[in-house]
Length: 420
Image (cartoon, rainbow, N blue to C red; front, side, top):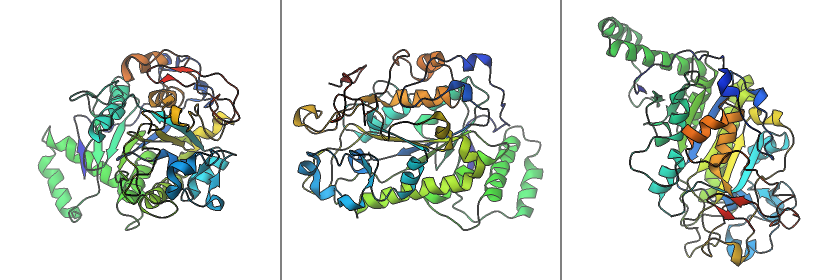
């Protein structure tokens, strides 16, 4: 099924306007180079709905306090995919671990949007709008990013267009058909019927074009559910006349009960996410080298396990940046961002991982250095009110004063509080 807001999926204009390349310095720790921007670059955004437990995804196993908070949720030490002497990926993330080993995975820990309450609805509103607070009927930050930039075309993969893509810019959406496929004879008759209709004719042609892209790129009967959306994402991103930005949504991350450690509900979700990114890499082929996959969630979960062997709504979580598009930016620590620690006094409200990095700055770096946007445009249009250039990530595994091996003094984070 293919739906459209107002305009068509035209062939992208690959030439970047000079003004869009006028950026400022990159964020230390990510080390992205604006000069590497290519008209062939792709962006896939995966929204994990329900609030992923970042402390289970990227486990600070080197912190002696961790087991006192959540021993029931920590897999055996010999199964952890250790990134350094402090952080490890959950054992389900075998594919992500391989990407990290070859420089194709960036991990930002203790990251959050500007939201500080515990409502999924409002948290997703702030995450997708990119604003400081939840607002009624806001536009999405990604819609604002493409609104004045005709060289970028975005596509929502799912039953509806999520908030992140709503606004003045025209976007398309695609979802797997729920009805039997229409035969070619009927399709031909519909084309003849609506060919002269100025409204229905173009939309039918857009739908047929989208169907052809997916049919040519997907292996028949090879996938279903979220896997089918991943296959479709690869088909669209590799198509000559397809979009260069896709958005996917994955539900089921609200683990209030029976979350599990090495096995259980969250392990199954981790496995699904890991296999999906591996699947996307395989299906993209050479396009993977020009792709960045941003994985984000509305907020994190509590540090302590609850009485139902799950975790409740928290604050900071983890964001992933995967893709061959991250590889050319040089070496970096296994985990980025100042680490707040797990001492009682460092927890937010005595229960949550304290946020030390603003997710908007991570997204801004991707938009600037990978997709060619200027910092001024990002600050004024995409994320209005975002602090001026100069915000920098500290290397959490080496430099943060809050990390056991660190030496760097704390950095003030606008809207996040001091990290020391």
